Image (cartoon, rainbow, N blue to C red):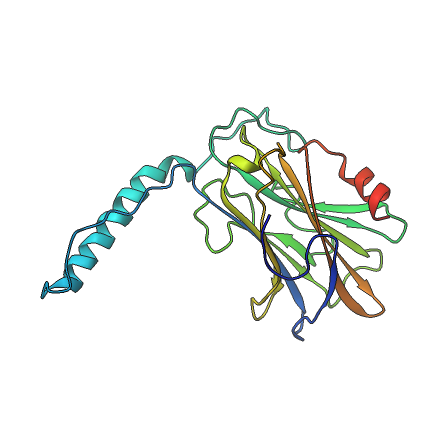
Amino acid sequence: MKVFKGPAKGQDAQIEISETQRDRVLIGLSWDVKDELEKVELEVGDWVPFRKYAQAAEDWIHESVYAFRTMQYRHKDVNHYDAPEARDSDFDGFDLDLYCYIFDDHGELVEKIGPDYEDVISEEGQVYHSGDDFSGMGGPDDEQIYIETKKLPENYKHFLFVVKSDCKFNLNDISDPVIRIADGKTNEDFLKEDIKPPANVNASALIFAHMAEVNDNWTITNISDFADADLDIPKYFKDNLG
């Protein structure tokens, strides 16, 4: 796993959130489509007088073929038997899901925010999900969660960010998966890393990071624990962070 920015695994850091009416923190998840098309290369030399037109044609060809090849990943057929709490191991596209588990000071789960339509927004409205994405083409983030830290409910004390693979592929099969925590106003990353497990680890979930307010300051801890998608997250929190 490569950390592009922020604290290393097991380390924490204080973050400075831009002062606004909401003081938002952004958690973003991205990945690439299953069959990445290699760019079409046209052999043109610097001497060609109309090089810019050749380049435009090359870009148009690439984008057109790319769109055609990836249309099948733009939508996922609704599976009425796909329980939100269980992994959809029959889906043969890439589908990573982003979750935020919210706990109180006693380590009890208060709310879970995720891509399922019942979980996309918290009861008080300060934590919300962008919705499920199956395409890997949402860029720069395919799924996002926002947390408005300004007026959070009293019992929202701990935020645990988790990625799960809701398809037949494990994390080490996914193309270029990246997750980050950023400032909601400036989009500056506080923590950003890829989520590729080591070659000998077969994981379908990542316990990414923990965020909490400590002495009136917001702190993030890089956890980066690989796990199974069926892991009991509330029990994990109590055993390791509660």
